[in-house]
Amino acid sequence: MIPRRLLPAVVDALAEAPAVALLGPRQIGKTTLALEVAKTRPSVYLDLEAEADRAKLSDPELYLSQHKDKLVILDEIHRTPQLFLSLRGLIDSGRRRGRGTGRFLILGSASMDLLKQSSESLAGRIRYLELVPLDAGEVGQAALETLWLRGGFPPSFLAPSDAASLHWRLDFIRTYLERDIPQLGPRIPAETLRRLWTMLAHQQGGLLNVAALARALAVDGKTVASYIELLVDLLLVRRLPAWHGNVRKRLVKSPKVYVRDSGLVHALLGIGDLEALLAHPVAGASWEGLAVESIISAAPFGTESHFYRTAAGAEIDLILKLPGQRRPWAVEIKRGLTPRIERGFRLACEDVKPERCFVIYSGLERFPLAEDVEAVSLADLCTELSQA
Image (cartoon, rainbow, N blue to C red; front, side, top):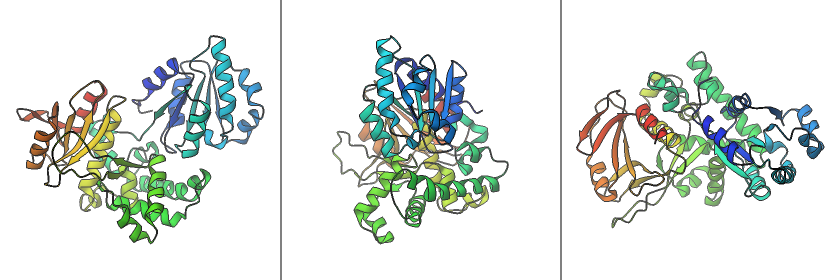
């Protein structure tokens, strides 16, 4: 198992909250992480996609009360959303007996229905954690090109070959479109959603233009907005908001949009190996997306993430507002081995006045580019943020 950064956060959350929801796309490693937690304490694991385990919960209060001194792991809970009401009663009775924390670890794809059910039934009783694909800080510099090409879903990253990895990702996309999304509720034509997903991959890291997407898909803007909202809810797409600090400039206000896993970007575009990736026009934007996801994943809980762009061309790829800090960090993302400070980045930093400035590049050495700007590898910055 590749050690996941989220493991200590899950353990800490269970020590503080009665229920913890671990959310993320399928095959991201939620079950593996939960079973690692289960090794540390008495636990019972129920896979609610298995008919035998669902049968055990035909009378959930009776069954779960028999395991009141154990951590109960409920996998794929979106299959039985009615359980949330039972969990609320069990949590409240446990609190009255002095057992107020660490009762339930809930795993599920981040569907709108799941979030709605838990927020209504378990308000004040549940903490949400998001498990994302493997990032640069978790795999290290040596495996960074593999991570970039294949993405961070463990079965894809650890596949025996690039071809096997691509086949897994294509199967993942097809399964999500044809089975998983319909199971979660929305009735959306799979081909339409696939075309939208592919268009977003082509425009990786670009400004979101709902009207242009709607025209290309021959549907109305509200429909496209709802489809994108669904992909965001499923943690497959990120909308990175624009920075709206107190600067007297004409700022770009539309969010940037990223397909969150670089491996899915490449699968949607038919890119199968590193040579094809390096020759493809999306290479730079794909690398930027990997860096953005890795940095946000490594940042402390509660960090706010934005980008900055003015109508005059001043731009910062990623602005991080860390908890407890008045001034943000500014990050410029480059893929080459010879980092340099662009004029637009320098002008943007004069506007935003960040606490620290970094230029990400593909080398290993860390060194100053200017008095207040450091060149740093992606893995190195992720490590620093995870310790901040």
